[in-house]
Length: 502
Image (cartoon, rainbow, N blue to C red; front, side, top):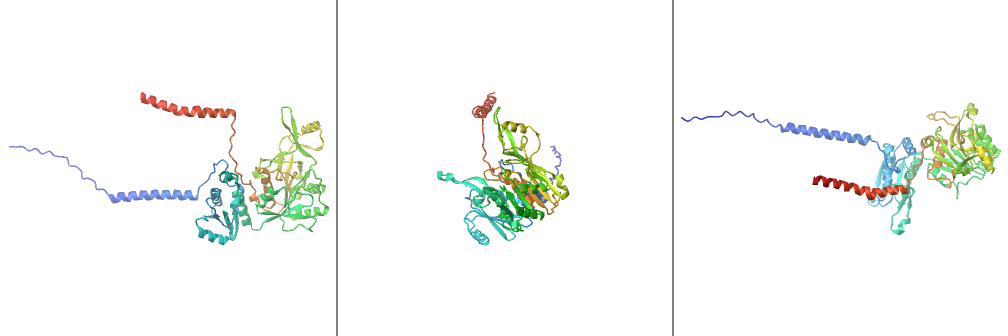
């Protein structure tokens, strides 16, 4: 009889049913959630982001003046850009306008039109703004008013290399200066007018003027100059927002001083640049009444030129003080005042009862002394005078305000004046690319015109990067290039070969 043995196999559990719909819905929800989070992050990053400029010369970084001006704009600016790709500064202009858009926080719309590719749109906008130039340009529109800024106004271009087959080279990009000036012109509408006093052998303001750089710089801030001869008027015209008196060589007559006093008492604004070599007792008496005394001296300093040699100079190195709205953003910045400069004495306590406030603006650096016997050639006497009263602060610029408020946040009509005991530092041959003098005069003008929000440092001019290597540095560079750089891969290769050999 055959026996059959049957092995009881363990029953295997039935396979679980795959819920494909549930997995699909789960994956879909995860994908949707990831996309939602990515969209939210991008949306927040698009609306709330911060930009930093880490470039060496900060070519596109906007100045504080431009940022403060953009904050004051109430309406919306529209900028239409007609730039050909072949224009040397096309990229610079586009990058700069991006910074304007970011700083304006939605107040600027920009449309880029390539006149070579989009002919119909370019013709439409040319007809709208009545553009007749073939040059690359941009048009700024604000409240129905528009202004054109050409590429040639935004850059200095060197064409000398074209004779040798080289392209044009941009030596200085001035886009921010010209664009901001055009915006100010449009937003403010009517230009502010300054009366430039003539008749006392002041520097001319028209024709071949020695202050052409200053004139152009100030006019770019929506300000225009108007010649004013006090002998020809019965009263100072009411449309003049302020008066500039720059280096009079002769004193003012009683009638002229009467006109200036009346202007001052009616909340007038004055910028007074004095020439210490000129004798102006009536003007000095007027300033003394307001608590500012012009001293009959000259600031000098002995500079060491050798081991035992010293030289006397009358050019004054001074720094600006930060206690005034005019110089707050120039605090501790130095500037050179060429030519003769006298000291000023401010006596605020004497005129406080008359609601007159005085603020020092610029002070000579340490080492300068005020010499009353400034015509002497006795070096021993001058050296002895230089050791007297060391460390005494010597002021060369100050401001006077009558009837205003001591709080900068409170705007009250007042009489304002800026006085500088030097009139040659604004001339073309004295100004430098650092523009400290221009910044100071710009700040003074804007304070006199009650445009404190426009006081700031002017746009920077790009500078060429240069390296100066000493003989020791060159020796280190030779060792680095000829020895160290080849040695590093050689050592790595030797280490790899030794490892493989082992």
